[in-house]
Image 1 (cartoon, rainbow, N blue to C red):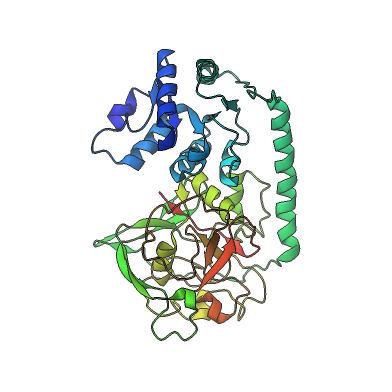
Image 2 (cartoon, rainbow, N blue to C red; image 1 turned 90 degrees about the horizontal axis):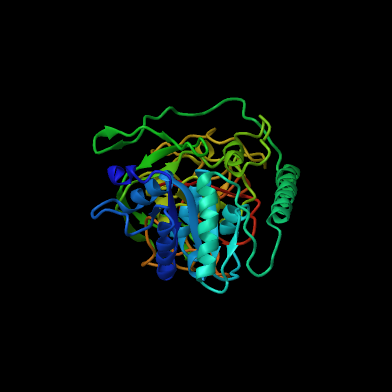
Length: 426
């Protein structure tokens, strides 16, 4: 696949939902008719190639990315992942909006500063000509100024307005939690220096994600009993029934919760002070967490992935002595603590229980859905009336609420003061 793409460096990547394939093909034909080489799936993926890897390579070699924006595409986790990669790689993104669809917050985050091209009257010859002109300017390195097809909005004014809103949001975001959460630096680290996990007889060293500098550890495939632990008398009805889950593929999971320092690298917000840099970022919504992981070329873990990794092969309600592995109501002093200052589980993961609770990808149901995917992408975006999930408890949780099987339902649009983020790296 690398050789197949080598001659295509500097091409135009077309991101679209399968429901918009006819439009995407017309865009590709129009751009290639004007002399621009396009990369479009599945045409440019060789038979037998790894599909996700080919997509990522196509994005990495692209100079510009055209996103077909429609009701179908904003409901597609694949399109979200693609624009997240493009955003992280600092590619020129040109949204081609087919309808005045309301963007979910994760899409809006990636596209808010892009120059839009509205095509509400469809993929007409006139709109294709405007798109081709915009792509030509982007490929030549010129500044592309696109007008809204029907509203005539001045994009520079909108850009300034967005910058102002982000500036205000940054100030509010970083000041508000500081009034709610007292900061305390631990006197010493309690890392245990565990060796890296062993997979098929070979040590798998942790990896660093270059997008935000976070360290990820390898979680090998396997199976486990998900839900209420044997002998656990504190279980709630939504932790039932306990059921066997197969994790068919290994995956890379953040060794710690996303810290304020790493979060600021991706969100380009004001850098936290040295005292706050290693605190988990909290106060996030499910949609913000989902968008952050996508921006780092990853995703949120599924609920099954999270519990499998947190258990680390242990069947009980905690993967160690609670006071040694977690910050919770019994030992936190009512405050948030730095990451990686308690003992890790057998995979080398810190703070899976306590400190900050963590978003997972799945929709919340009052009992387990046996058909829910154990690994990989789940259905997104969540329906407006759906509840999201956090796992692991937080610094003020009582002991029963940091059990490894404990589930907490949350509104998917609301910022949750105790909720943080841990990502899977694709």
